Image (cartoon, rainbow, N blue to C red; front, top):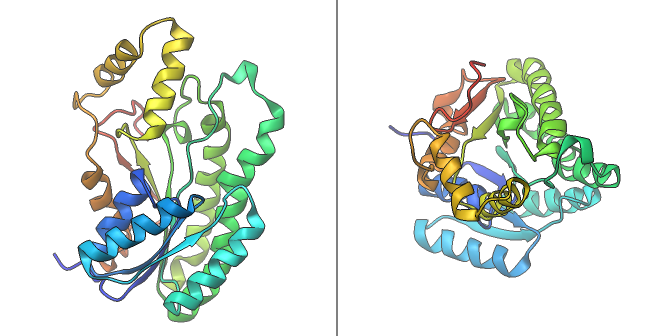
Length: 263
């Protein structure tokens, strides 16, 4: 199936490793040109070089800090200059701070809000005028299970991710007529640095070994395995494609049926 991504221009956040990198690889494999962003300059440049070499597309590294919404202005300007326009905005961020709801550190709420909501929304506000003018655009955000059901030891996910879901649905309703789709990808468990960190935190909370905590995670997944990065990337590429034009305002799960709720 031709996804119609050749020549499309994508700005990819937190895309130097993990799920963001998987999405970047998948879009590049379909012929899209990319700006790959990360807060780590060395990792960002290495990822851009590797993706460009593997897929023969243009991949430009741009360093930006999601904790600083003002830096999103500079990121978008550089991406626009590098690619000439942004057709696809892929929103991702590092894993939120862990912790229990009863023990929430209120001093962390503001920086986590900046990373998870203020910076992504700021980028969306920059991207929308061009998408509307071209009558085509894709906005895809990486969410988490806390959007639909509270997760243990993940208070920031449980508190802030539902806000992104509400905003995204409201925006989708407003811009669908302009040929723009706004969707959220909800991943299950993939082996990333975030999974290692949260598993270690859970193990300490429960008083068990990290290996036992990891085994518990696997047992809670009906597929009885963790996801593969290319499985996530494939769904990301599809949602960004011309073929997904009637999928809008949706939360699309890539989780092996891990999340227990129906909706």
